[in-house]
Image (cartoon, rainbow, N blue to C red; front, top):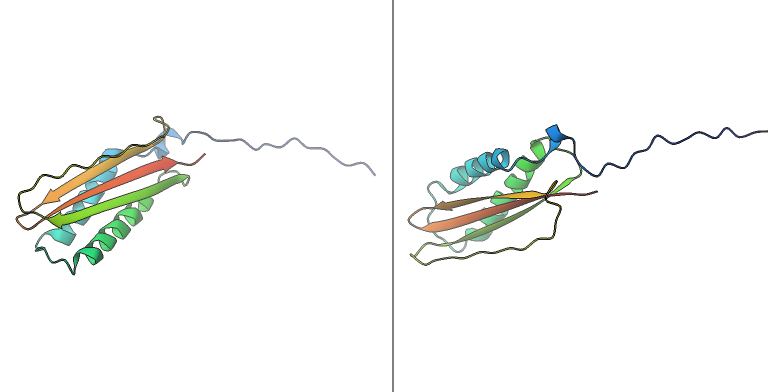
Length: 126
């Protein structure tokens, strides 16, 4: 009995195809729509903030997945909502990633009562 040896055709993909690359502007438009719809008539209420934050984060993550980009992208969404009383807010982040494949986008929203910042990170897992 002889065993037939075949060469594997497996490849190791370390970059997404160009058409499947994450596009920050495309994602930003989707996030802006979600935030505007959710907070258009919102007034600051500390009891509702946790639910708004979860809803915006969940909807944003789902919309990012629905963009149809490479399945190896993992999405992280950070939502900050607070009372707008004229104060300044600074937010910073530092990441270690691959500039060719990973990216982020952000949306800020403000009305007379609240401010909101949504940051979405797309990290390619290879």
